[in-house]
Image (cartoon, rainbow, N blue to C red; front, side, top):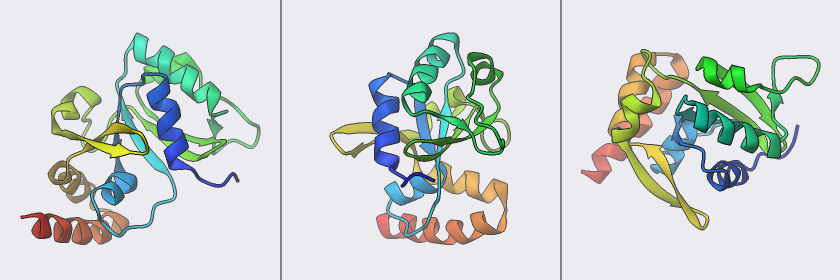
Length: 158
């Protein structure tokens, strides 16, 4: 497995003009929560134009499905299906999500994002309050653990 470089993944997505929002563990880290995460979760806009940009970025990242024995790369049709693509790239694991929570898509959450500087550019990251709502709705053990940390970050901010 390659050494994860979430920054490089973000740089490639940004370079190709992909419309996406960082959600999940990396979003928690960017908001200041001391959590560990092993992949980067991106909620992408599902559209023809964005699928083309995303496919070009995934090609640069040499993306392939993590769950397959043979290396299989995602197709444009896979991207337009709007589901969850669990990928391995030359810079680490990347989850490309067409929806999160209870079917919320990019368009549903785009207004609940903040631009956060990383490296020499800024990326859209799900707002802390919205991230807390997502974790609460999922209710998995790992989400409950992160939820307590995210709520502590929110209390400190207030």
